[in-house]
Length: 288
Image 1 (tube, one colour):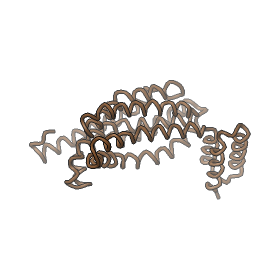
Image 2 (image 1 turned 135 degrees about the horizontal axis):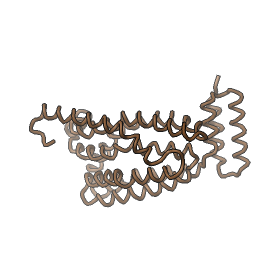
Image 3 (image 1 turned 180 degrees about the vertical axis):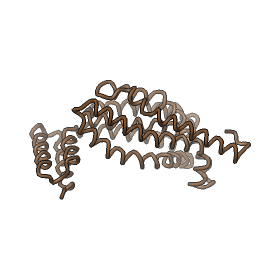
Image 4 (image 1 turned 45 degrees about the vertical axis):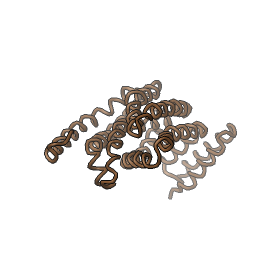
């Protein structure tokens, strides 16, 4: 019977000793290899733990800190400039948008990272597996994002109530940024499974700077301006730059990442046409 708790303890011990020299790293690797051979954990978990033992805890921590800063600076700016009411609308719209996205991303990463880590020495299989996983994810998330954009007022009123309708425009604009969310999230799989956590940390800093600059640029127009600037910078600057950055080396190129979105984009056009037809039927005077 496997004992994932013991494996996790060994991994945590590795992270605590990440800066303690080569002997700590070699010892953790030997312990995890022994753990695998003794069948205390299954092969997939042991391979994932052994792989993660070679990552730099400092790089991962730095990337997380930069990401946190880049994703929360907008709340600070809006709250300071426009008060709690505007911040409430903005943060509620963001939370509502991210809720379904997180339900897909977290379990997907839990499957993709250990799977890709086992294929890192087989470039063609690695690339094909990554493409298959991401294409399927995009078939769900991109049409879902388009549906949320096209029905923003209905969703906000249904889920939150009529009092929150002023948040619908913010929700709709933020939905544009969600179109590339599955692609962007998947770059983390590539950085981690290719042992490029230093590059991940550097990109996180660059991405945070771009995000904060977009918040500042949109601030004069209030929360809707911040959301619009963030979405535009994501689609036109951050996403293309990130895919180029991660695709410079390794078996997956930037073109491979973009191609994964094509089936989802095709499905999204059908969703959009259906929603527009429904709006025309139910609300003939709608400005849509």
